[in-house]
Length: 287
Image (cartoon, rainbow, N blue to C red; front, side, top):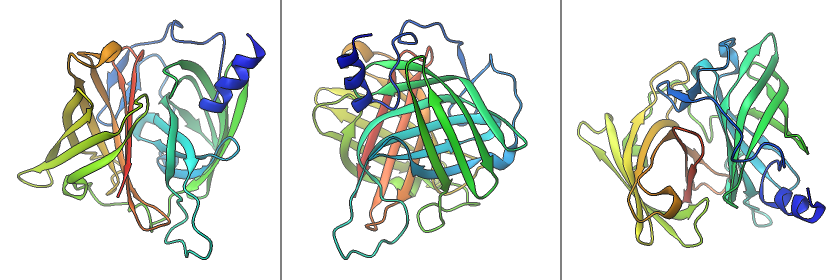
């Protein structure tokens, strides 16, 4: 690979690879009530690693990782919000200033060791890369790992999300997300606007529409009722219309995460992939 291009990719993605790109074969995902689980990977999973994990990744970046039931794994990475001098942080989560990409796949975990060989990194350049993960975890304490392609590797170092930003043990409430959100979509060069409306009864589900100019994604947000139940995590299904370019008329499934940031703002992050895992969608907004 051209060294200049590889350096460029590293500035816009968590990991760049010249051998595991979009054309690499991958197993078909199956629905698992909380994002996408992959049928090809054996189910060896320690439930104590489930939850939301906040921390650091490559230099000058922050990551949020979600480990769901059965090992469903989502990780977002990007630039952090920098607090003004003298500002008292309301929580340890800085929030994303911008989103550079996200990783999706499934984990196996046992006796403090976690691994994966089926991860995929969706970047803001529109390129995607195959990754593997090897790491360790301690229940309620830490989740550390290395994400690697054939060309490079990057560490992540995270801790459980604190109650000040992430509320555990409560069934998610779609009404908490209700309203208009202005933010960005991972591949979009223009402002993205989302409308989320909770349907009666209020805690059953919500409709969502994300508009990017003439392109729209519409779907539903549902409470994620499982052992990872919290106010913060939801299941999402989306369908793009016919005006969304290469992602037109495509169905996506994934997760939505709502958190409080250090500045006291509400942050919403949606991550989703197409059934064949060739296309990714992510929306980020704070208010």
